[in-house]
Length: 169
Image 1: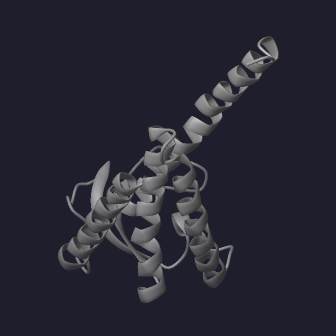
Image 2: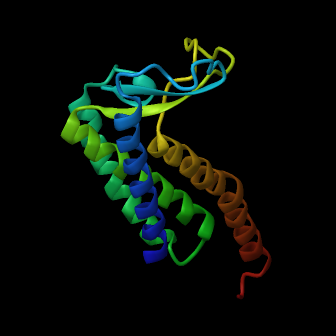
Image 3: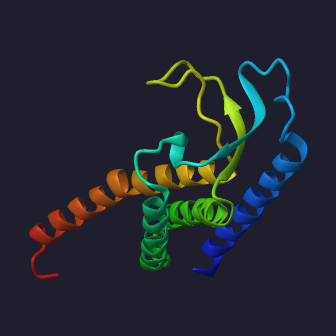
């Protein structure tokens, strides 16, 4: 489990270091590069949850996030010796959570600074600004849920078929 928690720690350090850099280098300044139509570094303070959505009060979001972190530790403990893909995914999600939750509790907002201009999606005219922690959560979710839905479910079906064909073993 320590190897997965070390992934989490590296992500937390990387996230907080880049947020500190964003505060020093980008806050109060125009985005960089000035012609950044596709990609730019642009300081933003996110006082809400993901994608700056605000339909749930922040104390509720923070409380649920802390409970979710407990669930993530439990899941990581369950998978740690079984499968590497979901374990790495859970480590990434934890890294993202430890990157954003303390910042939200202490500052009241999360520093975002990475911005891409994707084709308009839903109501976004530009993809919402994000940070390393947000990226870690998304990568972790793809790894974990991809494993759960596409690999683990097949393994369980295969085990059930084998149990039916070989009832004595």
